[in-house]
Amino acid sequence: MIAFWILALAMIASAVFIITAKKPVYSVIGLLANFIALAITYLTLHAEFIAVIQIVVYSGAILILFLFVIALLSSGTKAFDVGPDKMPKAVLPAAIVAFVALGFVLVGTLRDKLGPAAGVVTATSDQTGTANAFGSVADFGASLFSINLLPFEVTSFILMVAVIGVVLLAGDDTPARKTGRKEHNRESIVKRESITR
Amino acid sequence: MNLTEFAVPIEYYIGLSSVLFFLGAIGVVLRRNPLIMLMSIEIMFNAANLALVTFAKAWANNTGHIFAFLVITVAAAEAAIGLAIVVVVFRKRQNVDVDEVAALKG
Image (spheres, rainbow over the protein chains, first blue to last red):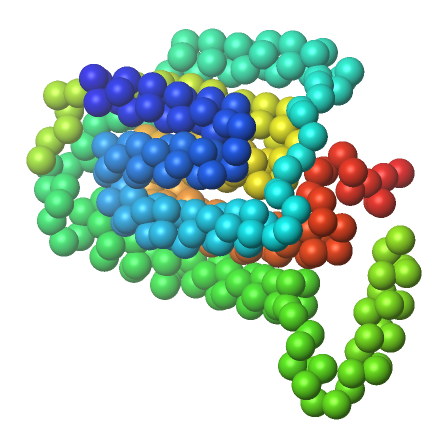
């Protein structure tokens, strides 16, 4: 219980730090703290494999991607800067509605008992930590590659589409320039810029 | 290892998840920096994942773990494409203020 409250406080504090930070680099640090606290929370929920994936994929890959983009955008001649945060007129009523909705959710979830486990997250068995326990890699893999095989394959397709999309969006066209199609390439760039303006 | 000595009601986990989702939504709405907006979206993904893992625990069914795994994968793809869009916009306009980039505004 004490562990849960410490982790919850750490996650909420780091989330507030992320959305109030002046510079994106500080937000990345807050996000790192948030991810690590969340991974430990997963461990308390007996989701060991998800906890490891959380560290590897989020803290290892996505955060580094954010850091690379921040470094890329900050290294130009002009400083990477945006104007002050303005509060749109619709924000205040939206915030009130969201607070009320959140209050309903919290009251509802904290009052009703959910699930057959009498509302308490307990160990499903005393053999947690053994090879085939709930949340272990063996349990996860057996489920992923048998009944959930189709979603897994669809995920690989999504990742392939994402890779192609990123290369198309952010890929540099210098290789085409080197192969003697300089004029055509410049024309296409000019055309593209005239379209976007 | 038996964790029943600090058994936490799952309602607390769901409450924490909704609070985190709410904070992420506030970040998306209020900030103008697209990088911080993307990070707020990541907070919301994580809040959803926390709810999924909690329900998987409550029902002793690891489909929630599978779902969280797929959400993490899609979040990685989303972050890659979102950051690529930020880079492209910055390269074209030397400016990534989301209020200035309003060409698609209806």
